[in-house]
Image (cartoon, rainbow, N blue to C red):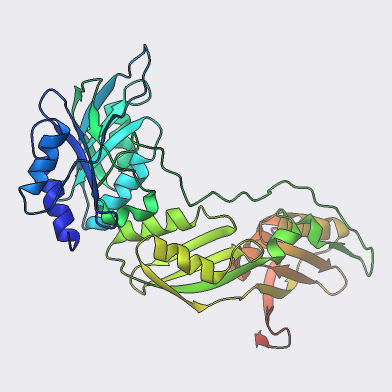
Length: 386
């Protein structure tokens, strides 16, 4: 085999044979994993079929893909009509996502026929739930038919790969071996464990940074980078990258733009770097590089507020604003009718803060804004916008 056309040629020819349940061909490993019915095929026949196509094929070994035991699995096959696929990336996306779920034994998605064939454990899935899972990925999926599958399906087997190598595959068969995900979901502490700090100076109340909904040490280490991404062809590529990179430890948010071929990622610099993010995107089958990184923005907003007449009004504004995610500190002065707010723009913007104040005190009127952007890399480089 010399290219992906060879891979597709073998997979298309064998998968169309009666009695062949699924086939996975790896160009990188020069191997094929074939699931078949022993009543119609044996391992030598499968190898001979491939050899007759002009390749040098020989049988490595055969093993039973099901665990031995008294209680055999009741497998069923769902045939799902899938509309909205535009490229091989869509195929890989569906196979990686659905194939890695517990109870899914094999999945073969055909871009040409706009359908997917899924073998599943009927104790954990049904046909409608499989179609719904594919539909939730952004495709139009409709169940066509569900049929029973023979409980004993030996297979011509090679070691299967992780989802990160699916660029070489047309189908994935998790029953052969359990895929080990290279992407782990990040966990962010969202408990409100803050401490209220009150300084009664000049008729004002200052609520310290530790009162923010997210702990200060988490927000202070957040940075934002911009990555260039080549090789995206459709919205499925965007969703594939966002879903997988979003699961990485330290990644707080990611927005991928198909038209500009860029991604904006907010991440915890103590857990992952911009270069590592680019490497992870490369492992998904795309070409990525860092355009800009290290911009940890802590913006400061000065507001002049009219209609604030009492300490109760001051306290209401401050408590209402500080409760929002991304607010680091808020100080409202009754004597000067002004508010000083520090916030993280990745979570909230000036207009959102103004709306918060207007909702907290209906008589508050927005008069003017002094917007100061402070870059972490160079605190002296401030941009003043009136």
